[in-house]
Image 1 (cartoon, rainbow, N blue to C red):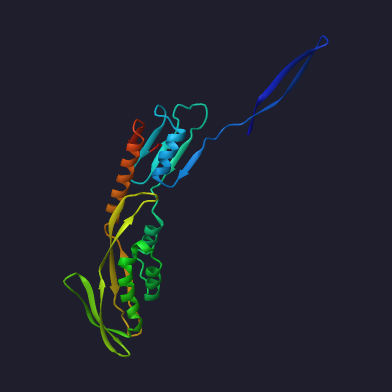
Image 2 (image 1 turned 45 degrees about the vertical axis):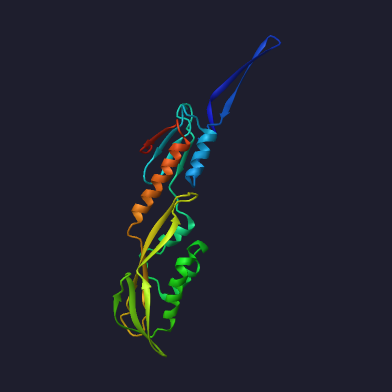
Length: 240
């Protein structure tokens, strides 16, 4: 709310003229900025609030921006933005990328994986839990024909051997509310203890992360173009 310049009202009565004056209170609409969480939300909002003549949509590898009516000149325009959001499951993986985890931390992480990952995760979880009894790793790591990490370790009951996969492959949907399923490869590294009382550390990375995200974004943009056929959709972003 802000005041416009003074308002003057002239009121004639009984041969006299009364001049009244005061301020007019005018509401200036600030425009609505929609913060969206999926491409489906972008599509629904544009179909509901936009028009093929006046709606402009920009996209790049990071986000989608929408001007719902670019014909408006007398007030700020309604806009929307969606910054390609990860699913909860994929976000949980990205949170541990490159961070060394001790055995308990890694076990806890694997235990909390959703059921759709369980057929891959459960064998790995059992192998990692088996290392709880380890008192010392014997010798260097070696790799078998399937690129599994193989090593011997000591327990109070003697020596044992175990294998850990160096690559974990999961079918995952990366972007929120998407239906695009990808085979995502995570690499697992085991850092050997430097001292006798130390436990190994686990490090998960995703070297192909940029490729997976790029493919997921391209799929969502393609879906948006198909659903919003006839709307102006351009590669780029809004200027400041």
